[in-house]
Amino acid sequence: MWLLTALALAAPATIGAAAPGFTLPNTDGTAVSLAQFQGKTVVLEWFNPDCPFVVAAHSGEGVLRALPGRTSSDQVAWLAINSGAASKQGADKKRNVAARKEYAMDYPVLLDADGAVGKAYGATNTPHIFIVDPKGTLVYAGAVDNAPMGKLETPPMVNYVEAALADIAAGRPVAQPTTKAVGCSVKY
Image (cartoon, rainbow, N blue to C red; front, side):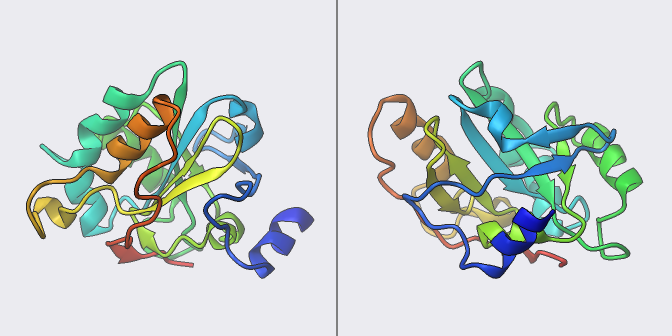
């Protein structure tokens, strides 16, 4: 815990630098660490099951309803992280368990109740996406796409996460390593 507290006090993670390590419990209490995915690309999705932006992204035809399944593989892992403080919207463990079923999420929701990991990454919104490459370097931070709430801001539709994952898979630097995260504020 001391390491995470020290990380939270430091400047947030930066693109091109080593991603902050962490170990957090998932909703069944199992500890999950970033280190266990060494050698894989890891997508970190800041999550609040009751945020309208998260609901839109995970419901119906929402971008996060299918994207993790299309892009997860032996080489890509998805982790949702809820940095909501106790008694804040969407932070309850039971609510996150129910949300995984409701949203048909086949990847874990990790509980960051003290917000140390969220602060170490500089997570500001839900959803806010961070991508760590197989070498452990933070290579993307920002929005899922340019259509918050499923509404296209400026044509054409751009899925920033898919584009970043394609760049990583091709061995290229991520062409657009940062975008503005859009959504609800993280409920620290």
